[in-house]
Amino acid sequence: MGVTAAPVTPSVWRSRAPGIGLAAAAVLVAAGLHALLPALPLLTICVLLGIACGQVPAVRRLLDSLFAAGIAFSARRLMRIGIVLLGLKLSLVDIAGLGWGVFLSTVAVVLLSFGGTWLLGRLFRLPGREPLLLATGFAICGASAIGAMAGVVRAKHSEQASPVALVTLCGTLAIFVLPALWHPLGLDALGFGHWVGAGVHDVGQVVATAQLAGSGALALALVVKLTRVLMLAPIVAVAGVVERRRAVTTGGARPPVVPLFVAGFVGAMLLNTVLPIPEPVLSAADVVQTLLLAMALFALGAAVNLRRLGTTGWRALAVGLLAWLLIAGLAFAAVSLAG
Image 1 (tube, rainbow, N blue to C red):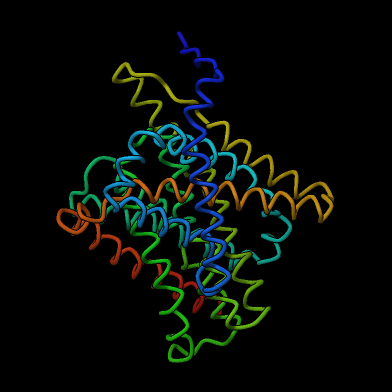
Image 2: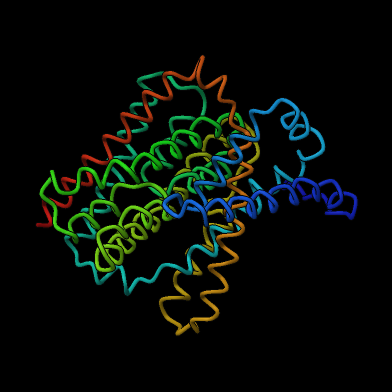
């Protein structure tokens, strides 16, 4: 028998309100910092701000009590709604414009980096769902992909903390490291844009890095990056099927074959492909999507315990850095093959 969800009563919303308000206020602070430091993407700042808040003992106590319900709601529900709206950034027409060579090489980068990172996580004996979450974040689209996968495999917040911190750290490093390697590697502007789109984790980090090479490089980087985002749906769906089979074996509750938010993500992408959605509508959806993901990523960042990561998380740090080098190398190989 299925489990009936409990009704959301006014008292539930009252318990969530402080945490949701904190996440919204954090986004406002992050927007101000982004205006001062435009090289750092807004979503990256939100994760870093959440991590910083989580390390302050007095704030930590409030996060675990007064703000707990709203922070959990932001990390889970708002993340899923934001991922659905993220589908409106994708169009199969734009992806088809890449050509089969670039498309297939991008898919190969995602699959190889996903498998390689997962194997590294297993080799270094990372606990629980951490290898899967790290692989998802590094191969697809950073912390938002981690949140999506965590919802499907029912990962604990503690299992998400290290992957979120590491994918944010490495993505932020890429903003500064990749431009320094642009000319020494002999890449032209479009080649650099292709490399950034295929190898940098978060969409905002891609924009911050690729814009240095001009509008043409940025446009190519975004289409390649969004092709990687497209892979979120099938990879999460496969994970859902595996999780469902495991639940059948163990007698636990079975998740849906395709989670509703993944179906919504695909539906939004198809809608943007077949219908001429007015630009003001897409712009408004982009603002809402950014706000929701920013709140969700602040909430995920707030779960990170840097003290634990520094003392017992050296294996996760090693996996993160190796995975970063792996995807950068695979992306460069894809660019070289594309000529």
